[in-house]
Length: 348
Image (cartoon, rainbow, N blue to C red):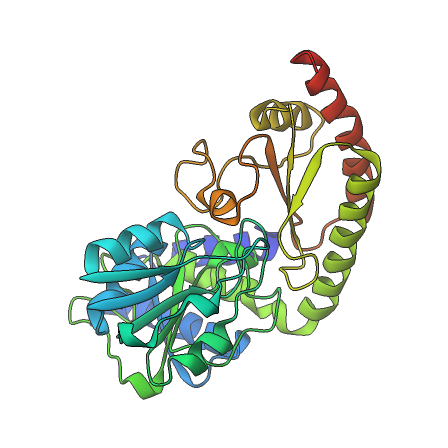
């Protein structure tokens, strides 16, 4: 989190500590801060035609969404997050999981009209390999079926599709705190907050400081996000090329163009991913290995498996907002030496 986001969290923690359902002055103050943050997020994320709700996690967001939409028959993709796949399997009677192409995009040629789905759940882009999904095309083929879109890692990074019915994403994706997931529901759905919620917080006592901090993080997006996304897209393109040119036996995955601008995943043969992470960590470069789409990142990636890609020795690089180009250059050089060292250590 940036300094302004931390300051907003601290200020709200001192000011909006009371229950926003109470009618006394501290309660009204808390409700005012929460309402203002909600309105700010709605404006900053250009969601004027949607009602905004909050919850503590993707899991609770999905549960709330499934509870409020017909979901007996669901269509989803093979590279959705594990929590999405698990929630669909638990909530729906029938789940049709669409396979993906080698780049990780859902293969719509496998969609069968006879399924008659009541709900479609599809990520805007895959956070693990970056590939943008054909949300608009699926929506056209399933005309009238509500479209639930996971916008993880997408807000402030790419232009969102227009055909979603419900959209959700974590505030940490755009520089806000962990512990706040934003749920946007089109006003045409006619959603209202459950009676147990307060000011749009779904489930439990609202984390008002976290919501206020998320609103401040979102306010910085509209003016600069497109230039930042363009810069990140070029940096990742350059990094992909340098890896391909200088490191043998590497499998670069995901669509090279139709992708999140800041994400790069690749697998290096004969090279344990955990060892790569540890070596780069010692050099002050923090990357990830394993699956980005499951709570247990030590598990082999179901995303890479669905794509038919290598699941061992994978490394996932995600450029933060405001990244330093010199750090990317340093990473490119470190990867060459680090992969060579780790391979030598395992006898390759």
